[in-house]
Image (tube, rainbow, N blue to C red; front, top):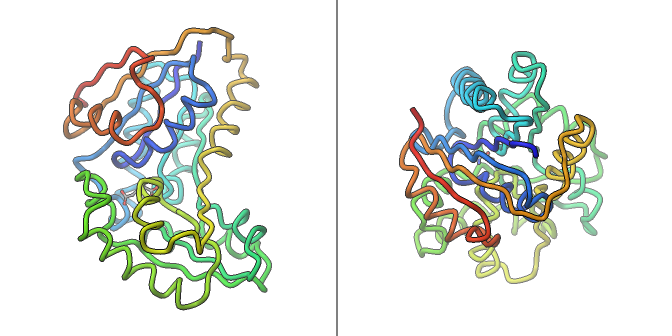
Length: 266
Ligand code: DGL
């Protein structure tokens, strides 16, 4: 059985854990949320790189066989550094799905909603440069959204108003496809559909990320077959009990099928 570490600045990576439980329910997981420091998206590159490495080292010290950096911001700013330091463990990152979006967009107009740190990163801009120039991307930083999602307010009026403001340039440009370039944003699906109906196709990369995780574990010979759902330990730098409560509220997976534990980091 593999032990898989999933790390995010907060609860965003639960969207990746949810998909991991769908594809790989029998593995064991540690979900690590650095909620005391969320949002990462407005912090310096140096700080994000240092803190992300520290937390991945912690997951490695707990015996993880693979680590998912379930945060676009930490992936953009820190993954190379983490891979260099933790050479013996597969480190899987997440990136905004601009490539599948460019392929799916009929109009060739794609909105990208992500954090400021992701949008300004060399990694994101290098990926953007590989895509056909006839596809037009409208990049929008979702400032202020992550704290509202962290506070469990994804569906409240204040969030809808802020989201509407961020989506305005994307809608005005006539985009038919929207990349959810932050793992917190899949929790805004209901709010987005309230604002835009079905007029825009949403792209998030969680399925592809988990396929990549599965592939890496297979290569390492770490995937053993079992019918029993694995255990999940929820660890937060802020409040472990609240993290588990939010996971139960936000995730589609039935956490009652798993043994769950929660605790504070430290
Ligand atoms: N969930 C994160 C991401 O995918 C980080 C959001 C934040 O902490 O600003 O980018």
